[in-house]
Amino acid sequence: MNKLTHALLIFFSLLAVKPLLAQDNWQESIITDASRQAIVAATQTFHSCLQSELKSYTMKASTDPRAVSDIILRKCESQLQPLTQIYTQASVPPKLITRYLRKRRTVAARNLLRAAMFRQAALVSQSSVLEKTP
Image 1 (cartoon, rainbow, N blue to C red):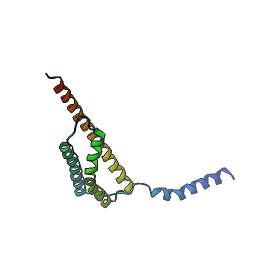
Image 2: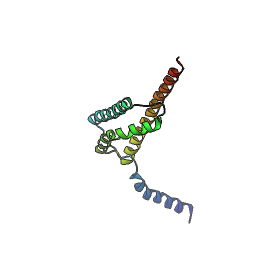
Image 3: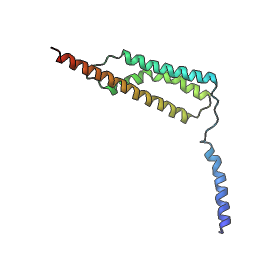
Image 4: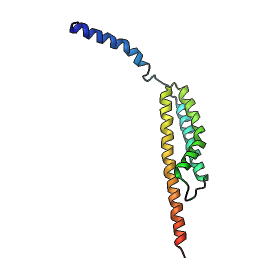
């Protein structure tokens, strides 16, 4: 096979593969202003659920902060369902929705863990101060 034939064969095989690869590419989605407002509202609802659950949770100095953040995340997980519906209606690919929700959960878990560790540290320092006071 000469070089020209070989190059044409590669070129046409790449042209044949391109439509198969295009299926995984981004398909344009339409996120309207109403959808954006609904996304912001759903996100705020999720964050307010996390904050209210953290405030209402009674911690002890021996409580594991990771367990606290897991419990609170499980309680507020249902608040993310409206986001899935909004993005599905806007024709966002399911892989991107899953990735976005996973990122939201991860960021929320980090913030909850930080807040729970802060509360635990405050409880430990408060109890140690009370023990030292005559």
